[in-house]
Length: 270
Image (cartoon, rainbow, N blue to C red; front, side, top):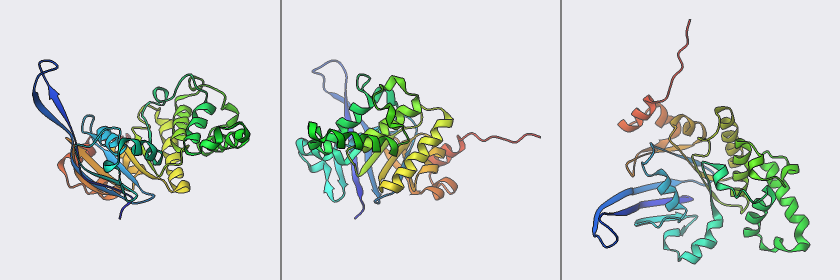
């Protein structure tokens, strides 16, 4: 059995017109029968244009958005069958990295408070005064893991650069020691020079922590760089799925070919 399995997952929304008591006039099939398998320690790149259902699918996997149908199975447990209170406790095992780190971090909390709060979700005993030193050490180690200087742990998010804030967001996602990370456009808001640093950091974390990851992007070249497998999504469906190099060099779906043709190429001049 694969580490993460999606079986015919559907997430539909009912669209109404004419006020509160109007009848349903349309069904938006944001995710429409997606089936995928992800092995432990691998990275799946999920690529597609804006509005194709990528983020809705990620929220459905995270159980932030209830599935209309199908199953999401993580490490042998069907998440879609769990009661809401059990989902909350299980969510420590799957965390999310968002596109805009500044919007996803609490501006009133220092880096230490942000990371300490997330660490204590997994280890509540560290909240006590007697374990203050151990908690401090864990925050220090976590900052070092993502390439940040622990001397800055008492600073606030606005005092860091965009790339540093994304490293903080990554550290917060790692703090509860999750088994699955979903990275939703984590580099698209960063300068090109910083994007490669964050991508290399995610690759290193996958190796050292044996993380399983879903990496979401609209940029097929970025997805190719970081992913083992690529799933191409269009209009709520997976139109192509396979090894990253195969999808990039020998695409089968017309939509994948169009995405590849949209990648800019620099021509050498004499």
